[in-house]
Length: 332
Image 1: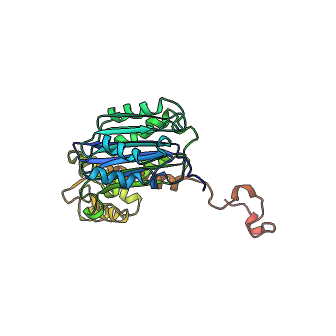
Image 2: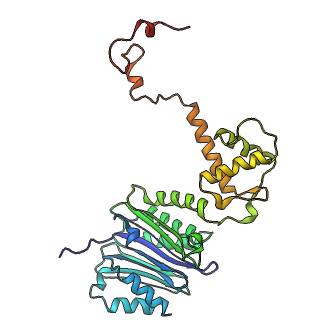
Image 3: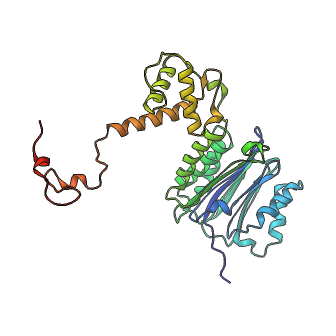
């Protein structure tokens, strides 16, 4: 029987006490790493299984964590029952943020791990020994909530070389009680990039759209009153994108509000709709970005007909044959 392929991977499992969230972030030169490595359950803990990953560690580890066993005991029991333990790498945080990790002696070099307060970083087939410490320091020093800190750790690990074979897939799993879609389940964030030349950057891009569409992470104090220059810019951007037609007075009137709500609905941003005359800065930034792209599209002179510039002014029309006398006649 052919052995399972090794997952040259670096990952972080972590816990945010202030917000009662647990999560895993991972990158690998292996397709669809998010289907194998990360496991987490709100109020229970999180786990990453990699190297020659034992996916059975996921459900069994969560079961042990659910029973109240601390991370160290869970790790000990998982490894004791596994004859291939020296080929495994595991990182665990429990419901209280206690961390434990294992790097087997047969894991491909470079391999190592580092645990800290509420987190464990681990990796194998790494570019060098700096990868895991860079992840740990980035997690410790990055402000914000758990998803931001997990993504920052991945970026830091990749900057030190990451998986020495390169990049292919990445994933972010963050759980919190009653925070799934429609407040059902605990999967607050569950994102995967299964095959991409820059999976960490792509994961970050998808997270920003997911955040804008489904999450409410911004500080309420950051909301922007729709008056003055922010209002005028909002109206300009809505006009550029065709949601607001014709001149409007510089106030948040019913026409402007209806146009803004249509923009939110068409982009699945109903979660960000406000009835108090304010808007989330992330929404205004996204709207502005879309408007700038539309203006740039209108101003470009690049032909959209393939090969148009290759034919030249005296070239044959797309159907073949010489240009007609009418078409050759100069204008002006």
